[in-house]
Amino acid sequence: MRLQNKVIIVTGSTTGIGKAIAKRCVQEGAKVIVHGLESEWANDVVKELGDEQAASWIGDLSDPAIPQQLVDLALSKFGRLDAIVNNAAIVASSNTQTTDIAFMEKIFRVNTIAPLMLIKAALPALEKNRGAVLNIGSVNAYSGEPNLLAYSVSKGALMTLTRNLGDSLHRENGVRVNQINPGWVLTETERERKKKHGLAEDWYKDLPRVYAPAGRILWPEEIAAASIYWLADESGPISGQVVDLEQHPFIGRNPPKDNSTIPSKK
Image: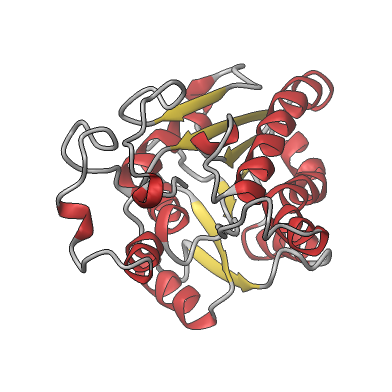
């Protein structure tokens, strides 16, 4: 198995992409720290994965104490830490009219600052094991959608963080830092968000080809499958890289004339 005996923290792993990554990591032989905001959901994930392979920690990543608590749990429960996956994020609509300082700070605390703080807290353990960091970004990092202003900017900052630390931490600490930018993914949360926007119950079954040339959007399990390479030793010395996982070129894509149904991409 590709992650045999590795211990990995996956933030935002009680649902969606994070949950899929946590499950795939265990399938590949790793032990995981499941993190989220909902204790019931976290308990369900740990039950599914097994108490010997998983433990959970509940906490809002805007709390500066949470990153160290996650690291401490990994070390006390499993005795080591080999990798972290910064997946947790706030996906919230905003534009120039609705984005104020408080809102921007709220988004950045979770989407950009918390990943850095977790990397800092985990660095001694990761350095000891020549470990890895995988940041989960978004194709919106490049420019973003008009109604996802704060979110898009926070993901652009995360991408710069990955490039920066992918160089410095690899040189100085032997820790690789890479990033995946998913496109539009069919998570549980995305299903509900689009229904709240007025779309039909089965909106994802009939999508414009401009968004889904394959006839469907991505599944969390497909992002999880790609993540294993970056967490495993087989990716060798590769660091500071950002990989887009989308089924069409995001930049330069011609949108439909009606922008009201432009989807939000993770």
